[in-house]
Structures are given as structure tokens and as C-alpha cells.
Amino acid sequence: MRRLFPLALLLGLALAQIGRPVEAFQKALGPLPPGAKVEVEAKGGRLLSATYRGPENASFLARFLEKGTGMPFGQAFLDWYAKNKEALKGKRLTLNLGEDFLLELYPSPFQARLLPRSVPESAFGQDRLVLGQKGPFFRVFSDFQCPYCQRLAREVLPALKARAREGELRLSYRHFPLTEIHPEALPAAHASECAQEQGAFWPYHDLLMAGRLGDYLGLARALGLDGEAFARCLQSPEVRKRVEEERALALRLGLRGTPTVFAGPYKVPNPFDLAQVLDYLELAR
Image 1: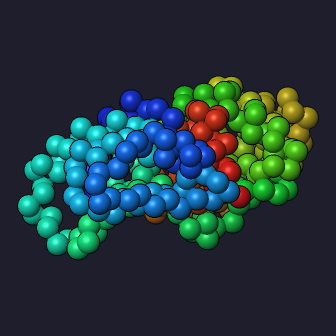
Image 2 (image 1 turned 30 degrees about the vertical axis):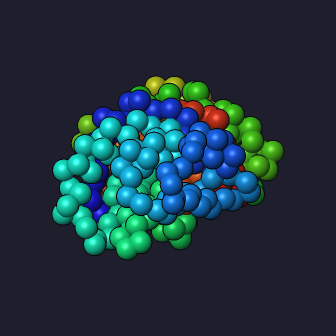
């Protein structure tokens, strides 16, 4: 795949139409160029992907991208297209739109398909640190020392935990310690696994995400866990291996930072936007 736009463009994030009711996208798109049509793929009445078929029209495609993603990709696309138009004739391409969307371009007859980035759920392997019994998986690849992960834990996860307890979804924590920049990330992840050994992962998770890093045995005792068993677990190479295997998985999936979040197979563009998270969870049902 080719990368089309840099991550800096994500700073202008707005509410994406993908995941929202199809009618909202169709209304936002406005009139089509002569001889063109736009076909949509929906799940549960929500936009999953959109395909433009018709004459090559860069200005309309710029609007198509912005209305479909809710992001300011338009001018960057126009600049890219102007530089590459002649070299692209007759070629089929898949382009990255930032980290969260793909654009597939097909020649003869011309068409452009916009869709969210996704990963087959089988690629995630076994989910172990799960809250909830049924519903789509909401997988959070996270790092206990990451301030943005701590923000997600404060601002979004409480609402999702409540829904998980009500049977609407399954909340899955996946370790992705950024050991290059966070020295406490790996020890904290290891300690959380030791809390899991005593059935207390999520309470321990909440203490860690509140910034209480370092005194891992003290946190366990504060939760009433068996201190001796916890201390032995902290020395376990098998437990450390579990965390390292999860980090290796995140790297194989091409994840670049934390938190990275998936609703079912779909990567969620803005995990801090609860409304968008719930939209993507609806797609994942």
C-alpha cells in the first residue's frame, strides 16, 4: 500500500460519516457529477463503505473523502492527485488515508472505494482480559504509563464498562507497552497480569491508570490480594512472556502507538469520542 496523507492531518478530526446512518452521508455529499453514482455498503443502516463510479473528478473525490471520513483530507488529496495523475493511469491502487481509512482506486471504468481500516478478528488471537459476556469486542491496545491511555481510561472506559456489565459489549485490554519511552510500562503490565491471577485485573487496571505506578505489591495489598502470591507472580518469567507476546502481536499488526482501539475488526479513528466509539460498535455487531 502507498501512504497518501501524513498523521498531522488527523489534528482536524471531525465526526466521521463512516459508522453513522447512511442518510447522513448521502445528505452531506450533495449532488453528484454528471454520469456518476455513489453506492454504499451498510450494516444495520450505518455506513460501512462507499464507492464512487463515474468520470475522474478530483474535486468531487476530495469532497467524497472529507464527507466519508469527517477529516480534512480534501486539499491533500487534490495536491497528491495533481502530482501523480499521469503516472497512475491504468493502475489499481490502495492508498492509506492517515491511519484509519483506505482508498481503493480502480481504472477502466474509474471507481474509488472508501472504507475503514480493519483487521480480521482471528488475527487478534485469544482475548483474556475481558469485561463482559457478549456483544462485539472493543479491544484497547494500551500502555499503563501512556498519558493518553490514562485519559481514555478516565473519559471513555467507564461508560463502556457499564455497557459491558449490561451485556452490550465485551471490553478487552491488550498489552502494548511502549518500552522505548515508558520504563514502567512493562513492569506495570506484568503486575496487572498478577492481579488477573487473583481475579482482580480491572480494579488493578483502574489504579494503574490513575497514575499509581511503581509500588505494585502495595497496590495489590490495597485491593486485598494475597501479597505473597502476588510477589511470587512478579518474578514469573511465564507471566512476563504473556505481556511480551501481546506487544509482539501489536507490532505485527503494524500498530504505531497507544491507545489503539478496535471495535470488532474496525480501527476506531478517535477513541476519545464516545459517540464515534458507539457508532463503530454498532458496525461491529
